[in-house]
Amino acid sequence: MPYKDFDETLELNKTKDKIFQVSCSRCLGDTRHKVLQSVEVSGSWTQGDYQYSIEYQIVQCQGCESISFRQNSTNSEDYDHIELPDGTWDNMYYDHIEIYPGRMSGRSRVKGDTFLPHQIKLVYDETHAALSNKLSMLGPIGIRSLIESVCKEKNASGTNLKERIDDLVVKGILTKNSADSLHTLRAIGNESAHEMKPQDEESIALAMDIAENLLQSVFILPETARRKKKNDDLAI
Image 1 (cartoon, rainbow, N blue to C red):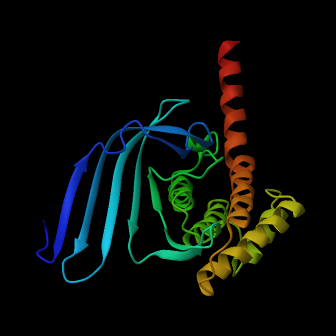
Image 2: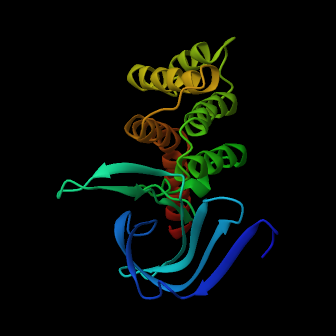
Image 3: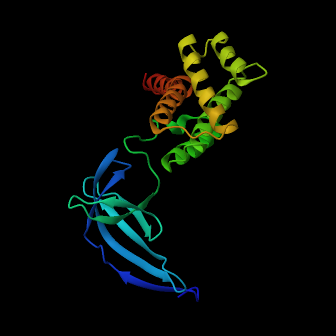
């Protein structure tokens, strides 16, 4: 009992062997996960009616067998009063589920990200982590920062990001269509950074697709081709 005003209990393996649908970072979708071990902490505020419950679970994908950590919390203040089919009313309590490590359902990391320049890979890693943890404002800001880092790496000229993106077209690094797509990402990043506007999941996924295509075309594919040529030359 860590605080004198709380009455708290702990129960081991209450949900062991239970199956949950969890987004799998390897299978790239929601799959059946089995609880291997669990700890449930439940308690109440001794001076009022507040109750809470937190489930900590080690779960394993029943497809690829990868291990993750699942946390589910509920409390007596977070609910909706709903009408049941028989005409009576009941409380529907909300689950707050977190998965570690964070992941995006259906999305893996861009293939060949180890070929990215060091600074750009740092930005990519943090952006991917933000999106994996559903940070709908920080994620788009990270995507915008990715574009900034590409412009810096390629010594693009201009007083603002729009001009630097256009200069990549002049340098032959980007096509006009690619630049137009990046201008859309720039606008999304501006909304998140300056207007504190979160973006919807579909828009963020599309923005990340465009950003990763940029990384592939500018860095990953050229480096892959260079290494293949080097290996072919050595084999002669």
